[in-house]
Length: 132
Image (cartoon, rainbow, N blue to C red; front, side, top):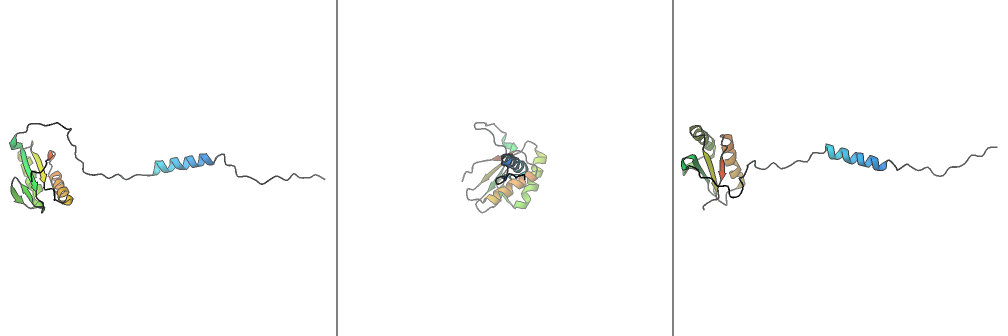
């Protein structure tokens, strides 16, 4: 009679386990998207870059602590800012809009003013330090 050899407990081959883990890692790294905060898209000049600008090419937008907007020292509603800036840019293509805000102005009002300027087509926006 032929005796059969009893084999020991069967093992799960673990040689390819590292390969599978590596492939899963690569798969998740490639397919995962990381959302980045966009922020405000402004290009700031380097330190020390100062240019002399003709004063007739500058218009001032001042925002006080209460959120009121002054365009060249004239109080205007926020919803009229876009139209006024658009007509000023049509008259002077070299117009630079200087924005100054009070330190207690809320960020939302500041962003709203910048949005109005961008929608008006202002490409030359200067963010100035407030004199308050």
